[in-house]
Image (cartoon, rainbow over all chains, first blue to last red; front, side):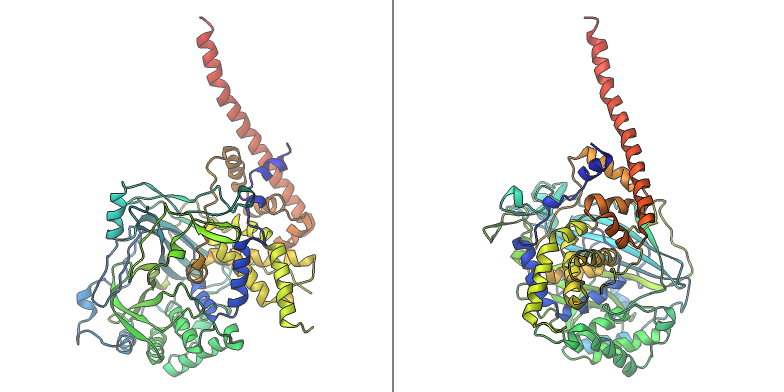
Length: 440
Length: 189
């Protein structure tokens, strides 16, 4: 056997184990692309995306929203830096009692934006993101939470190294109620995400490779890993489907609310969906809302952040969900901006934004709503075009107020410090920029 | 050229069906399996949106690999997009396993040897031997000249060969030792 054959044998994903283009799985994905390609919510959401970074793992805390209810505060093992504001509920709402409208919360936030350093060597953004998965059994259904911390160091100057430090934060039962079920199930130390398979071995899709991860109530976070790429100067985005902005460009963002509104609207109007509206498209207002959330994480002045809250307060259909505790245990108010996922029939969670009006800060975004059965079934089988859930051994819960994913903003700001990098830090093997080969 | 929209859609379906498996494999080899569907969908969404820019066969395949390369890169830079995309795409909950095959020790050794290579050298091997691109295609995808690619590929291949031989002899020695022990124990009897 030649060395090339040996390497071929080591292919972790053989072509024969990948779904074919004419498989039900692929064809359904195709149908989704054709019907949703103009879905603005894709654009609106992806914009939030670019700023963020990589993946990881977990923890689980969930904030349960509630008019009254509250939430299980989870303690994240990992973030080492203090949150931007102390999570003290006492200081959060010192003045006139509970706000009764989203507009009140947002305008209060606009009046209390704190300013930090206005420049530095790096624009540093730390977030913790998590997703909730079914992990229990029929007798003991429970959810597990998988969270990852991302610590991103974007150099102000292009040509310098940009670092991303990633740390898996553990895999745990998602809430105390889930933990109780998990214990009742015998406190298993691993969990399976399930797998996706077709009717027979010859048409299997990774059927032999279940995803197994360690599961423990108190998982010690593994060491962080880090990668670097050479920065082109991009520090953030206003609209995720458009080019990013550098420090100088963010410095030119106007500080008057009307000017910020005009800027966001201008970006929204460049999106594919607004230019090619279809039934699934987000409105300009919805896009502006999402852009505002992105701008709150960008290197703009305190005045611009304040104006951004004011713009958010002016949008129609913005509503107050109530007091909420974010996944890091910080107190704030949950606000939503109307339907964000117009194209989806089965799964339409509330896109909650947790804002702390006392410090004028965005704390987290969360998807809240019962996780439908179709999402819970992670092990599906297709036989003769019919899908069947065979994942009876991986059951989760489904209830009102369920958080099924979150992104908590730990901090965003300028710093002259240098990242503390693990010795394993390496160049991101996929990080070199490249464009598709030029077409004719 | 103006295409009737349904003709356009059919042409896209043909492109998708023909190249899905290759692109899905490429993506699955580079991102965590539970994220792969989102990235694959993104590749083809880009192709659909820019369909007028997709070159005719046989160049369409490499064009798709170029988009896939960017999408993988982008995905790795952008966890949050994955989270948000998942909300939209996961209604059918297609979630797959990780790529860590547990019962494949020899493959594990080869992959370990590959992971010790410089990233670009490793990618040269993957593109040719795992993704089944020609050397010319792989060079184009990596944005280097055919000569530079050839150098990189040969260097990487040699490095893995040496590493595998070294590991193999270590394994043989480990296997031989207990045999000898047993022989020495049983010999006197």
